[in-house]
Length: 273
Image 1: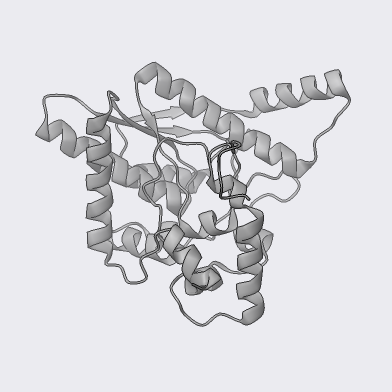
Image 2: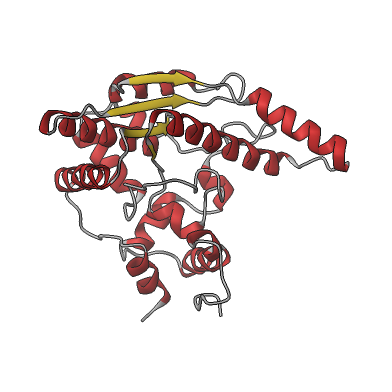
């Protein structure tokens, strides 16, 4: 088996997908999983990007349908988690209008992040780089989601899909630390196709993806940070032609970030040996 085939198999990428079927199957998955738990619904942080937008509408539809089909009221909560003022706040608000969550919350993570880093420097003398500060932001956002989830009895949704899983383009125990990941196996192009099928505004599903975690490089496109395009990644994962040097970069990135796709390693795990 080639490295490419191994990655596609492990990440459950479907090369040929139908937007209507993918949306329906994933909503049904969210409903079934919720029924196996004692939870009251789902929560997700809404950034205004395509992944959180699609995950959010899947969760809201799942909760609406379960409420209609059972005697229990299920809720989907969307939370905005800006660090100070978000540059693309209008996109986040547009995403919320499209998703129509049952409850909107906003928690500004800036005071918590700044205080944490200040105390770290005061106690150790260590001043984290702008990049590592970005990871702190991601972990603070996830902490807040779990705080709210614990209070309201919800499950936390993740937004990672196949291209982010391939490259490890997420923060370990930040946006990578969730309960349920309904976009798993989808390419970036497939996410866009489903949003288009659902009637999302084109400026939402055509938006250039950015993690927006670095103060010194605000709105840095993911593709710039990765060193190759999402089209290259999509093509690689769907067996379309990709330059050999790009394929090699993707596979190196996959191997380097293998630890992010596993639970904490134990002496009895064999994947790392």
